Image (tube, rainbow, N blue to C red; front, top):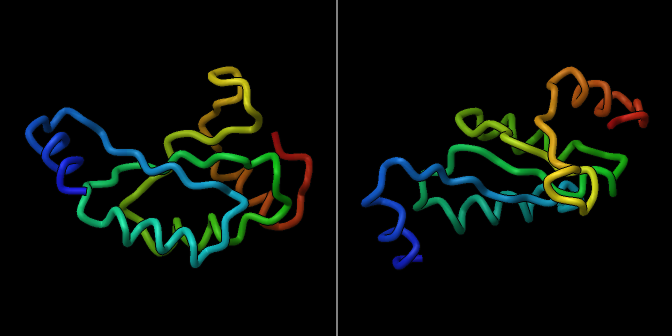
Length: 102
């Protein structure tokens, strides 16, 4: 972690994104946040969005870390084709049970 911090901090132009799997449990996401708490995490990248029907853990992590936004999500393994910027309205629809999420 010290080596990573030293590599990032001298260059203020580096944006730090934390990758979280949408299939992970909330407690595991919080553990990741605490493990990387020494870094200035600016955004999340959410992976495996297509592999879960429930996104409550994602919503909770976003609510508990309002200073960290979502840069991208993935809906498959074909990068960069399956990368997208998630729309908050679509996340809300998904949270309410709409399974036709792209």
